[in-house]
Amino acid sequence: MNSFSYLQASRVMVLGAKSPVDRRRRSLERVNKELSRGNYETALSLVKQLKSKHGCLSAFGSAKFLPKKLDMTSKSDLWSLIDSVSTSIESVYVQEDSVRISKEEETKTSPEEDWFAVVQHESGHFLVGYLLGVLPRYYEIPTLEAIRQNVSSVTGRVEFVGFEFLKQVGAANQLMKDDRDSRMNLSDTQGNISSKTLNNFSCVILGGMVTEHILFGYSEGFYSDVVKLNDVLRWLGFTETEKEAHIRWAVSNTVSLLHSHSEARVSLAEAMAKAKPIGACIAAIESAISRHQI
Image 1 (cartoon, rainbow, N blue to C red):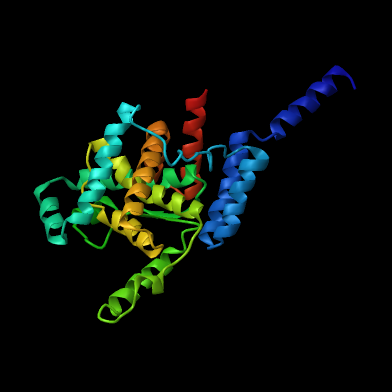
Image 2: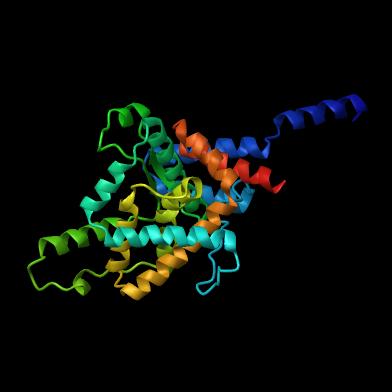
């Protein structure tokens, strides 16, 4: 082969080659299609393949849990944040609904501020789940117009593959309410999930509240996340002491994760604010973490 032919062949190879970013984009489009069809396990398998075989999604499932008995007091910058979030959670347990509502009414914010807070809150859930290897399957951010019209039924949410057990928790809670006057014991509705699933869920459900504390120094509303976590722990038969220790550990993990990946969360929030598909949100996370590592 002469030099001219070699150069031509090399040029064809370069033009035909796919960059890692292009490969990731095309693969994530497939993930989007599977999620839109409700093929959640297939979508999850694709994401796992992208991580293990191609290395396109290095951040997925990259987070490691902190040891259960780790002393965080040495990390003074995080300790105060952990303490603040834990105090907010405790306040949810002791306050009546009427008290919560009256406190929320005291804080006057604009629709734009409310919308911004919702976006940040949901990005916290999304990012923590992704870093722990829990694939978001759907998310919703209310429009600014809906918030301006004060539509109470409109709220943000993120759903994940692998948290289907929440339907069982809801059914058990309803059964307990329906049989409040009977002799039914809590053990009659007690459930069971793996410790990994519980640990993942506990951190993911706290991701929104922790994000608010990081950005604003406090959390207004969103009490349903804490109530949902409490319902799950009660469904699993946790004692009050066990619940307190587990929640404190989950708060520490979530604070550490979000504190370490602030740039990724900002990029993710920008994508979610534009209602971009799950694949584009994932790409935003991966790109931000890649830039941070360079």
